[in-house]
Amino acid sequence: MVHFHVFALSFLLTLPSPAARPVESAFLQNSPDILKGLLWSGGTISIFLPAPLSFADQASPDQAFLIFKRVFADFTTTEFTTDPRLSRFPGSPGGILRARWSFRNRRTGNHYPFRIFFLLAPEETEASPAAQGPVVRLRIVEIRAEKL
Image (cartoon, rainbow, N blue to C red; front, side):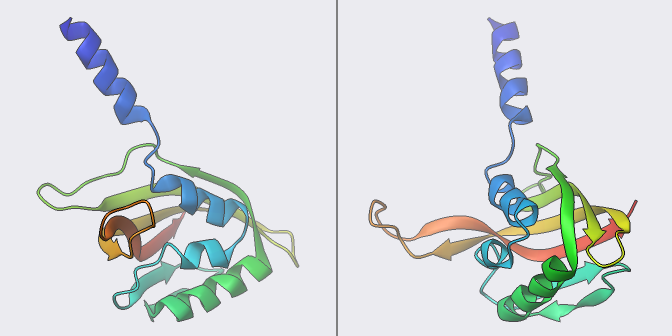
């Protein structure tokens, strides 16, 4: 019986985080619109992207949308895979979603592989018609990438 519980727990821990699916969709579809819906609306989002993207600053959700609109216009995603586990901080909600992001410059054809990290924090959102009261969802508060 103990073996079954350990097996079930290990299986559940390898399932992709529900927060990963919409992030994957945003990058695989090169969609700043999907990404905008995942951004924290309570303040600025820290964005650190190395060359060739070369951006490091705080941005409002609207500015982050415009940044990624430009990124997705100039570069096309060729690969985006997330780590199935969300790294969590002990005693605090949220965590870090890690992914591998490869993209190609549309003009030059050059490929760039990045490791990208999304810091996720809970944010209370408006209730859906089926829910009773506000819903808490994980939102992106920081995006940090490094070249591989």
